[in-house]
Amino acid sequence: MFAAVSVPALGAMIYTVMRRSQPGPVVGFIVVATLFFALGNAILIIPLGLVPSGLALAATGFDVALLGVAVAIGDAFDEGQALRNDMMRSFAATVAVAILFGGQVLIGLAVAGQNSTMAVLLFTSLAIAIAINVLADPLAGLLDRLAFSRSSGLSADRAALRSTEAALPLRSGNPLDGMDEETFIRVTRRALGHYGDLAKLVASPLTALPDIDERLTSRGAPDQPLERANELRALLADRIAGLKPRDGGNFGTSEQWRHYNSLYFPYVAGVRAYAQNATAAGLDPVARQAWQWLVTEVPQRSLHNWQNAAARVIATDLRSNLVPAR
Image (cartoon, rainbow, N blue to C red; front, side):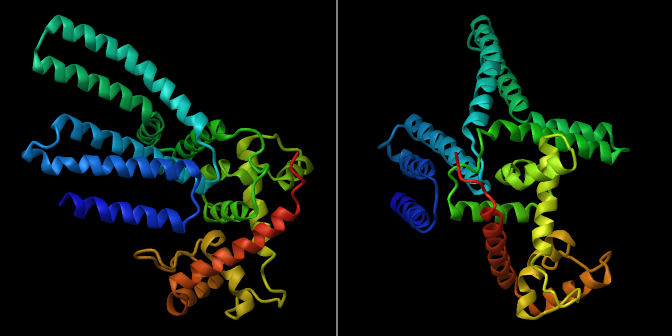
């Protein structure tokens, strides 16, 4: 059973790493996590007495921690973000909370002696204190929705500001400096996918594009993260519009329309053709026509491929305007 669980898992991870372009640290974390996952499987043979139960449980816990870090780094890599500064800030805050509350736990245990009920209560209080620190933003969002239920706009604005604040520590200098072509294309594809989510556009490295600086200067807007995110959205909309064929029509199904249709209708017009229980209700006549075409004639995989190709075209255009890295 140990071999049946560990060997296929290790093979699957190696296969994934070999096929995908992942950052070096993630590969190391995955390898180490896989090794500890194999040790964690020792819990299967604990009844045989071959492996101490404490070692098996500790290995399993360490494995879960490493996998969590690997997932976080991998997700940040896909988004084109840095993560170290944010993780260090969160770690420092968690350590401070753990020391403050953990010190009281030790004092309580020393006073209460070997009282299991008191020990459970004290450690539960420590876990809650750490959870509140780690989940501060989601909890703040929940409280805003409860307190400002009659003003959804205020709740949304506060959520956008929190997301902006959370994204700022991820920046270190110009995120576009030294970025290779494939990474730039991937970041552009992500930004297009987040077109309707201003909070995620705030964290996009594309907000550092020189075009954004020019657009802010031309309209005299302040150089603020939300302003940059709004300008990035407008810039992407302009580039998507540039893919539209110049035949004077609003919609077509020929090959020359594919790039425009694959980006404009799903992201700008809000056509969700493949979403569960999706309908054409609320769409304008042109978007309704596009919805019908996507549902009946375009496989989801084909749309995905068209979007990747269109993102590559837009990325090439945006990258051509970059000044040489200093």
